[in-house]
Image (cartoon, rainbow, N blue to C red; front, top):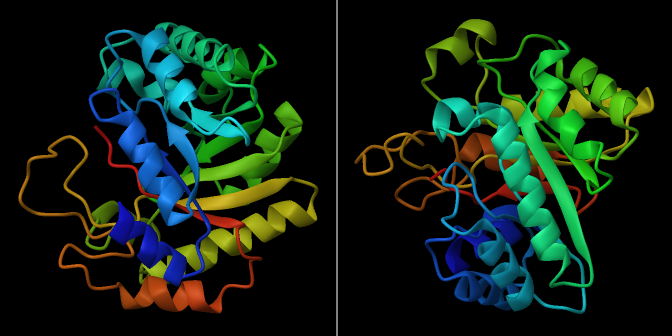
Length: 273
């Protein structure tokens, strides 16, 4: 974690999403990020529901610094839980609310990010986010948007999401996977740097039309094994940091060229469980 945070900071990336998996030492991960000076939104679980959700959220909130906001994403992509975690969407929403309320009971300033794949403007994809936002507990709505599943432009998705919820919006996950056939078919000739520039241009377009888009999160910062086969020896080429710890030149160049203010562009350190 320390080495990865250092590389991020060298590329002027001040914020991140990272994970506090219940199977890990939560306190150690919080302390490592603190020592590195990282400003983090913490996933309390990605696709690995805790045995005791309330305890996990209480533990994380109690161990976090109490003198500043504790940002959490309680459940990543509740709409996808039926496929990836064996838990229905409504159960995933209840899990998110259980963890949010437990965290709020043990920290004076918990802030909440939702995340779900919002790759189009159809109504069904918003149902889980609707249920979470309706509770009044959500501070920022996260849009997970990838080139191989996009059904309409990112700017249109951001505008519809912003108008629907009247809350700040975060592009909570996006990336480009070198070698991904469907991505190349849809967006021929792109690479990581070109995709980042495309995403930032779409964000700017949405902002000019009134959407409050507070940042972009590249998922993940380091080339990682396939999410569904974490023990695989090969890694997907979608990060800034390669498997041999070298830096992807296309993405690094796009980061150096960007005009976003420091701190507005965050990068995801989270490995899917």
